[in-house]
Length: 112
Image (cartoon, rainbow, N blue to C red; front, side, top):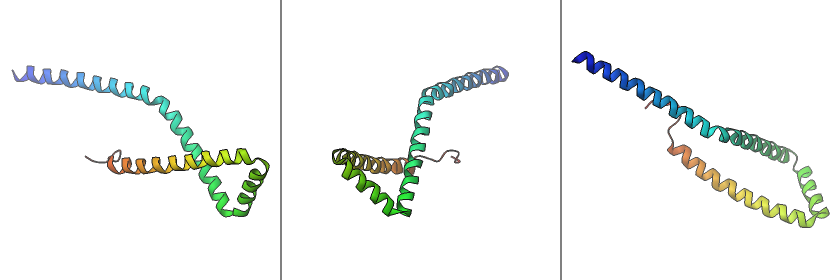
């Protein structure tokens, strides 16, 4: 009696392990496209931060470049200004959501 129960539990455990592995593989396949997008977003963010740091180190060069662009292409400069403002607002909104999500989510690998 006890032996048959242990065998049944072992078989059940093996089925659950196989199912869990299949679910992990399915999730990995579903999330694979997001990995590329995440890498692109990380690279873009790193580039923007470097540009901002360079502009903070030498603000006169940054201001001169922006003024030259505005004088040579005023319509385009206004369009870029509008897009930049929208992106800035989107970034700050997304950053707020991200911080709330990160605070609510348990850290990976943390003991339960």
